[in-house]
Length: 249
Image 1 (cartoon, one colour):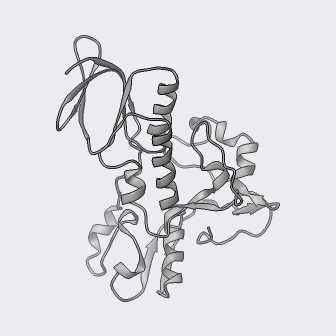
Image 2 (cartoon, one colour):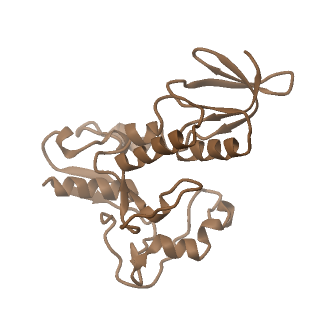
Image 3 (cartoon, rainbow, N blue to C red):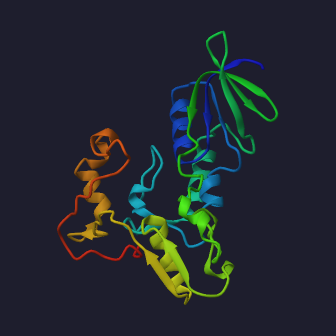
């Protein structure tokens, strides 16, 4: 097993690389284990035309800042993956790609055993930065529908990969809205199934809404202060310009 590391970080995405950079700056011995490549989920579970729903000026890593000419534009999937790779290289982060964590257990000596397919590592601390949205979840009703072909948003890449005919997109959040727009741009007939989630304008008083939320301190509010125990977020409509379609990015 070798020496015991101070920290093992699981996942080399936005969060995992950010933690690694902080650990390296503090001189803490650690290792980042990634099941695939840096930013694997962004590579393998995003469609070809994917764009972030926050502006470029906020799509930055710790210690970096955006100095480009399009601060309120939206970064694409490939641009963000390149950003992650560049960040890891610039800071010399100890990322070990292609090494999925199979199991984490507590050892009698008071540290953790982190097991992969090829080895077992000892660590005093483990940071799980694998994300919470990388496994599709379908409602039970989907199993009762046997007619049309069904795919999850994480498997969608482009309209060209789908069979002929119109497409029903279920869900009008970030993923559903963008996928519906991508299909419309490809000339497909689209039905967008929406829910009762409250809507906010994409822009407010000439600026991207996210910038107002940051300046207003909303992103500093603890999750338990505005998310109900059920996981629901009460709708709080923001008054201003007419609301745009969920398809707009």
